[in-house]
Image (cartoon, rainbow over all chains, first blue to last red):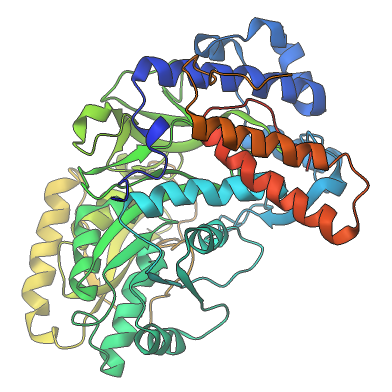
Length: 448
Length: 66
């Protein structure tokens, strides 16, 4: 019997009207469960003047209040360590995880029960199967398996699918490259940044990735997985196809993935979550094709019902017809485009780190880079892009630097951004979420 | 009580879907039994796994207490 290209054909190809009805039914159940079990949500509903009886169909979603990270953090602070968002007793939890905390904030703490944890893996299965990964694959995880949720769910998804899982835990990058080669891994899961770091290590060790066993890369953890230039660079260095996924600790899993058709966007797993896109200022829904902030409602977690959660991620939703794979799940064009709050204001000009990365990655001679912001003469903001040059590309570098500076000037009007060579090995490498902005200004984003 | 013949969207269930739902309900019923630790833990695991199936296929709207 032919294997379906869909993990769950019944709902992945459901007519949009039926999909909306299913979301409505699940929303109704979720709200009733949150009202009954979660003091946090009951309080929020009461403040908004909503009762579960008023939520019967998908359209009723807009009656519900937004949930913010700040409110969640506040409830954890008030009743530590987990706050009062939990809808089930602590004793039924089997997993503890936290957000990565890379922004320096106190991490959120999350708990999952048995069914939650299996659901988390289930959502990853949609993505892995959808990108063509099958039980005979050998899947390598470049992931340190700590409290950060990262690829934990993906690991369990691959076990469920019957793949051979190759965990690399606290191995060094060198050890990981050796394991990939020794075990003939066919799939590698990593952040986009770390996929490049592994490729760099392989080059230095004389390991030929391009003609090696790896056929697919699953990228997650950074928006770069959907930046075409970054993806091309990764695919070129590995000789493999790369697919973007995106998830968040707050829902425990991924809510979007790239299918094999790769139409330039990621399908939303719409039978398991509701994804709204709103104007971050007004909170009103925006249309298809308009950029806005993602707001997620997740059906799968029993311990932590998540309803209309403001993610601060910027996205553009497009209809499912953009893709020819047959799924009726809508897409996010270009994946996650950035964060509402990651825009840098430099002398009155908006600079988006993702846009800078998209330009830098067009130049294969750049091995690693950093956006460096400083204050000059105690008053003037300056911005520069520091680049490490790839081994063997030194002779081309002067011309590359000139072209890169011109490309940046063209794309970011009003600013001249010097491109500076950084000594090899001086810029940080990351296994998890990369931080390529070094902001040393006296007053950040003051628009001077 | 006979098993429901339609899924959450009101479509007729296939014979396989009915058997899957029945397996799920049967496992849930077992949770009410006085089981030895090994059986209790593994049945809970099985209920959580079967819930994914009935949830994916829109056969049931409940959430197991496991």
